[in-house]
Image (cartoon, rainbow, N blue to C red; front, side, top):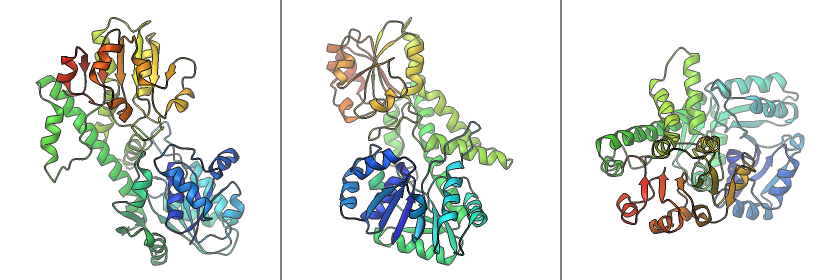
Length: 430
């Protein structure tokens, strides 16, 4: 089929590339000329495993292209997938401005019957508004169907999550829209769950918020483990054998980040509040996560009289391995606190440094080797469990640091091993 994807962020670009990989003819639309040139050259604007390889392959084979010419792109496709951002507003609600802009452009330019698919994460009922908005601005006498098709990708493994998804959720209000979406996904050969549009919208929020709940629950238990002398990793191991609980999302640490969990928990809270309902479990997850992010910094302030003029090694800037995304990354609030306290920060991350420079360009020393950050450091904070960081041996901290004092937010090291080599080591829940 001829598919157009509006937006080339994590959602839109990954979807477009994967549709092309499965044999569809795809055009990805963006407003940025320079970004389009970069993508046409085979380079990805985001760091994502396997993405560039598939971009180059499908562009070369003629199944994938990029453009800023939305008027031509929206003219005659079989389906248009909307994958633009829905950023969080100050009150926690989702900003639907970009969705509205794309819908208006589609309505004014589409000249054949078409399926409009909202892939962006949107509040429940948004697809109904999209349908009406399209009708309000429709220029030509064509029939537009509207469907919901939320994504469930994880940054760092987005391509794999799309091509090998656990399930594909399609939300439709007509049989024709359902059959068209099933035909689009037929070549994926994956389980398809067909529901109403509103249920599809809710499934996205409910799924992400449930995972956020698991993370915050384990962090809460980890904090109690520290007070009671239990080990959160042993506790998690024992829990993981229970099939009702499962083994995923049981790792304690310094909180969740990224583009989904923080935004989606706040958005669902806002939606509930608008309808006079209080989501107490989600409220608790958000509160725990906020406090968890700076837990190690607070521990360090109890140990150190000051950070002023101390060399602080920061290992890991991205919110998780496999991505250069800094949205809600625990490193950000911690580095803000360290800078205010007068610390001299030497930061390492294998892919996120360029993005971090957009936030702190001259206030931080960036290094390409973690050992350069550790050399003569007074204290070290670990915020991301990259393999290049996990490969650092415990004795390296003892040998390179002026004071081998390590605060590990990802529980990378064995507590006894660090102690045995002479490192003063603090982690989460152990």
